[in-house]
Structure formats: C-alpha cells, structure tokens
Amino acid sequence: MSESTKSKSNRSLLLKDASELMEQKSVRATFRISPEFIEALSILSGRLGLKQKSLFDYLLEDSDSLIAIARSNPRKNIEKKSRIQKTFVISKKSLSSLEKLLSAVEASRDDLVEYAIQRLLPILLKERNQQKKRETVLSEIAQHFEHSIELMRKIEKSVGKDDPLYEYYLAIIEAYRDAFDKMENLVQQGKRILKLRMEKFEF
Image (cartoon, rainbow, N blue to C red; front, side, top):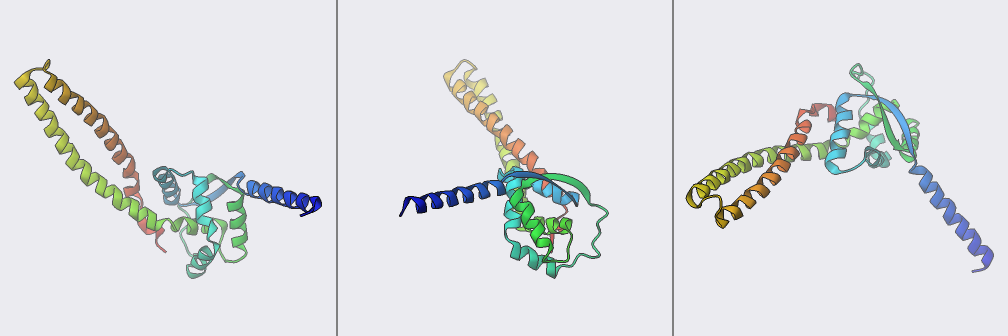
C-alpha cells in the first residue's frame, strides 16, 4: 500500500470515528408523554444501572419494530390530556433516528417516544415479578432475623456478654443487621414499579 493510500485510509477512519462520536453527543429533547412512561424510564434506568440516554438508544435502534408498532396501532383518538412536558438528555443519534421515523409513519414525535417506551413492557413485567418475589422473601428473612435476635438474648443470659461465644455471635448479628438494612432499602426502592399502571404499556 502506497503512502498516499495509507494517508487516505487513515483520514477515512478518523472521519468515521469522528462521525460516531458526534452521534453519541448528548442533546436535550423535550417531549409530551404520559407520567407512567416517564416513571418507567426512571425506574428501569435505576434498576438496570443504565443512563436514560442509553435506554433511549436501545429503544430507538430497532426502527423496523417501531414502524410496525406505529402502523398497527393508530393513535388518532388516544387520550393525550394526561401527558406532561419532560426534557430528556439523549444522544444525537437517537434524536436523528426519531426524526427519520416521522417520515415513515402517521404519528407525532411524542407518540413515537411512547411507542418506543412501550417496548419496555417485557422488562417491566419481569422486574415487577422480581419485586413481588423479593417482598415475599424479605418477609421470611425478617422473621429469621427476629429469631436470631431472640437467640442472641438467650446466649447472653446463658453465658454473659463477656463470653467469647456471645461476642462471636454478636458479630454475626451486627453483620446480619447491616445486610438486612440493605435488603430492606432495596425492596423499598423497588415498590415504585408496583404502582405503575401496566395497561398503559400494552399494545
């Protein structure tokens, strides 16, 4: 390969990399969508450890699916009074994808955003089910923790606080209490997902 060809190839790669970086650039976009959809994005981004920007990228990358959903679910008579204005930070790529989709379907930009978020339904259902299981298990753990506390009191009465056996068991209880507090906090935070009106996400 000649030096001239190598130079052109390198410039081409640099331009490609620069283009990809520009697509990932963050921009602010304002939509009017239902509060449930806003809440769903907030909940899942937290539970999945993802930024909302990354969720938007995921939701808008499959344009064929969104077009199919939009065409099979006309929303001319949809109730839009409950929608509220919300500004999101999304990638330039996502915003560009959204604008391109508008030319392919008879739907507003806000409708398309709701269609995209509806694709989260399987994940929402899975997370709701997981939350219910966690609450059931936490209830059982709470009972076990109480029994452990009762046993600690019995050990204290039997051998005294200064006995190494009690001290070892106390260390276990303290670690248990710390872990239990974290489990309680996890389950408490997850209660938000059970308050979502899931019928809003059905196609």
